[in-house]
Amino acid sequence: MTAASAQAGATPFMPRGEGVGAPIGFVDLCRRDLATCGVPASQLALLGVEAPTGLAPTASLGGVAGQRHFLGAAPSASVEDEAEAKLISVETVEAFVMAPVEDFVPAGQARPEAPRAATPDARFAWANRAERDQLKLLNQVNQSVNREVRKASDLELYGVDEYWSLPRVINGKKYGDCEDYALEKRRQLIEAGVPESALSLAVAVTARGESHAVLMISLKSGDWVLDNLTPWATPWQDLNYHWVERQVPGTALWTTA
Image (tube, rainbow, N blue to C red; front, top):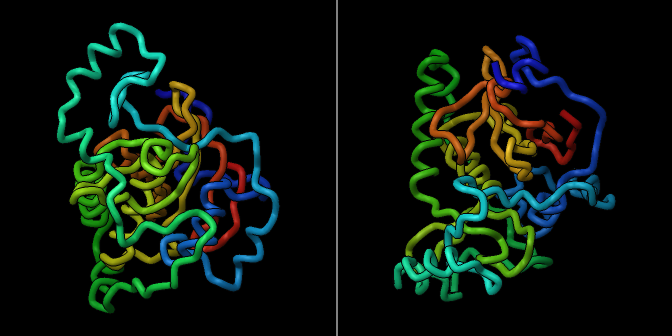
């Protein structure tokens, strides 16, 4: 049994604590991209409070600690890191060129809200699926997004420590870190008919001490996690994470976990 399971016992649904401020990256996302944020415009005022400062940026990429996923070694790299950087392909380096991207919106600027509703048939199909079939769809979306999106930090993509967004497309390839994976999975599941009221974002600290964001979905059997660090939808209590806070689905409100 993992540490998280031992702490949570057999609780299928994650207990909620007191209300807290939303992650600063989420607040910024809602200011510039309401459609991806998913919060009703009438609730944006709730995000005007000062963002919490105690949380590290949710920049978890997974893999071996210190591994370069995108650009190669940092200026202060060791001999081993320099040797690793030489193995980075020319294609990967070229992919970082800041080419014009139609869906890129700089921090502080707003993007017009765009409809993103599922078809009635898709909503009906989801509601009438057995949970076994619902989990099959969740696993398909989770694995597909994990394959399609290449790991890259916000600093590498945008030059800032924290920038929540859908994966950025550069030269036809998608890049992002943990919250970008979660937002893309949320977008695809809503289009597939999953109700927004079943989906929420959550922040945790991994066993390696990284602040990490994931997508959560509530099924009849409990709360499940779609994570870029694992291919399978996983019950929340089976992950060895220290859960920090979680969104109230479809709202600007967040609570401790």
